[in-house]
Amino acid sequence: MPIDATLPYDDQNVFAKILRGEIPSKKVYEDDWAFAFHDINPQAPVHILVIPKGAWVSWDDFSERASAEEIAGFVRAVGQVARDNGLVVPGFRLLANIGPHGHQEVPHLHVHLFGGRPLGAMLAR
Ligand code: AMP
Image (tube, rainbow, N blue to C red; front, top):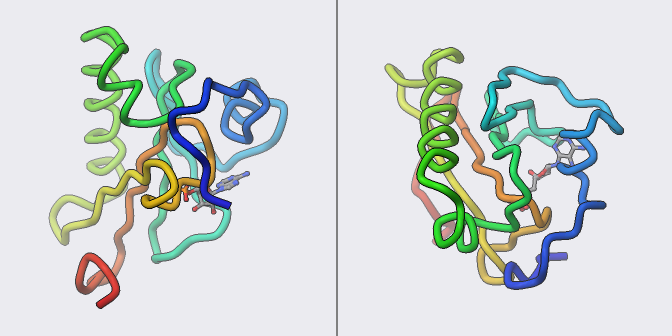
């Protein structure tokens, strides 16, 4: 079920548990600001999720209230993960779902990196 991205942060969400090491993940990257891992239900040959380490529900509260250092660290980590996984030259898609219309299911900010094949048009028509 898509969540309301204006709700307060729930530290029992699945990505909070992954960050705390309470449930396993296939990690591909970690630094002071971000953690990246393979999506459990990949929608493309490469499907990686990158999450900030801070307790942010969505792009909305992150962009409004995170520190400049935290935002820069997260954005740089996303770029690093794309480069590390060979996505830049063939190209890839970067996506963040926010709230009900965005069909956001996990209430911890995450960006999806999709790649490994031509991805077609951005939205179903
Ligand atoms: P979204 O609709 O943007 O909130 O996407 C949530 C994503 O998290 C989906 O692509 C799920 O397959 C993925 N997901 C949910 N639980 C896990 C998990 N334990 N490990 C890795 N990916 C997960």
